[in-house]
Amino acid sequence: MDSVTIAMTETVDKGLKKFGVTVSKPILALIAVIFGILVMVLPDLLQFIVGLYFIIQGILLYTDYMETKKG
Image (cartoon, rainbow, N blue to C red; front, side):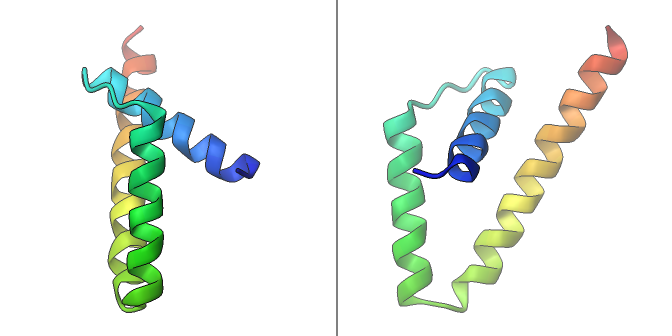
């Protein structure tokens, strides 16, 4: 696994923990593999998956910003 994938996995894991959701790394890896297969089978789905990633990442970054602003 490359460093970008590891960083993305850790970011998502950290963000989900803030909401009280814990997901094991094997489950996140399985989700990534499933999305990868779907993108290869249905290339038009790539736009949806990338858009969904950016939305989730934006929400996680904004909540992290708001938490650091409080404290």
